[in-house]
Length: 254
Image 1 (cartoon, rainbow, N blue to C red):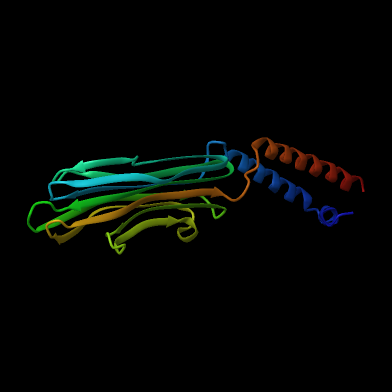
Image 2: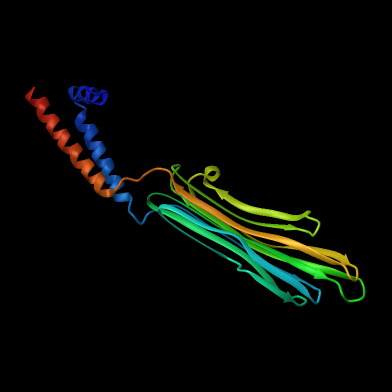
């Protein structure tokens, strides 16, 4: 005889089983009505674009995909996109672009999705003018991050970042935005911004300067709790109703 059975028998004798079974049945019906296979449990959306330009007449600009990943388990979906490999020469005030984006969502039942895109790039300046020059360089950055969860049993995270180093390996700029449902709590949250980062330096004749860049977009979403199938909920409700009626008849016959 299990503890659960003993507890239920005690409740029958106290005349409470009808209320408990009815409450459980109503709860099952409520879940059945509110949850569907199309319900979004957790989601994220993140992206960053960087437009790079300078005032000198000839710049070598290149990008390369460092990492791209979409990993999915359960009832989830996800995508990513960004700058593909390129190696081009830019004239004065011409623009090179680096970008990364990722999105994903978990629906209806337990699942997990992770998505990321990271592009590495460089911007190369060489002075062959015969005299010293001043280089003005601009990075126009636009980024955003969005997350959504409806309960503490779900988690979503999104981040977008830009990291820049000079030819000496020194960091000259690094920043990112991020949203985490473990910090923010359940709900819908969004961050977005557009701004410019400017650098100016002197370059002697015959010298060069190179800037290395990373543009990164990453996110994941997870439903930590299995949502019962609607058919299972309906069956559970019918069983509870049958048990309630059977035990009520047993109590009356006693």
